[in-house]
Amino acid sequence: MKIAVGADHAGFEYKDRIAQILRMKGHEVLDFGTHDATPVDYPQYGYAVGEAVATGRADRGIVVCGSSLGIAMAANKVPGIRCAPVDEPYSAELARRHNDANVIAFSERLTGWEMIERMLDIYLETPFDGGRHAYRVEQLFDFGDAQRARTLKDLERGEVTDARTPKELVGKP
Ligand code: RB5
Image 1 (cartoon, helix red, strand yellow):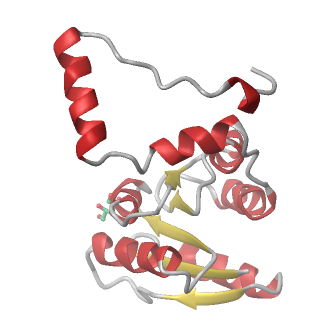
Image 2: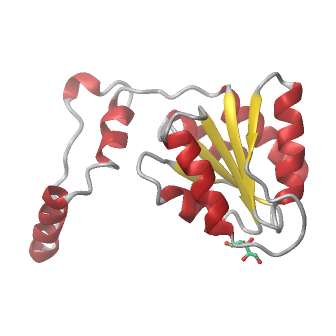
């Protein structure tokens, strides 16, 4: 795969190690930096990786900052991006199986390296389950005027109008 990576000054060491592992595994890496501990602003790196994936320059993205949170928020601003900040393997697996995450965010300050290595393998190897999850993932990108009007109506009623997955798409609950 072609994988875009990016990090701020609080995540560049893990990002560099991840890039090295990816190359060893035969992936092509687009490294958007940063490359040292000089303080930089994480949104720029999240946007760069997000755009690389959204525009098809990369198949997937990996971002790292101190907490995983800010850079994930930035990546998720890019239309088409589903970035999951994760700190343990089961979430990494579900981010792929259920949410078809196309960017994953790691924390260098809070997560041990061994955990990162496990989550990286899971992120790279786990397929998307599709089916009902595809129907739900599509709704993540429906937040235009129509969806907004519907949600505001729900707020007025005080209850959410469930979209409900079509029966033919429901396998196991
Ligand atoms: C940088 O100090 C830190 O705020 C940043 O890496 C990240 O954790 C933000 O969410």
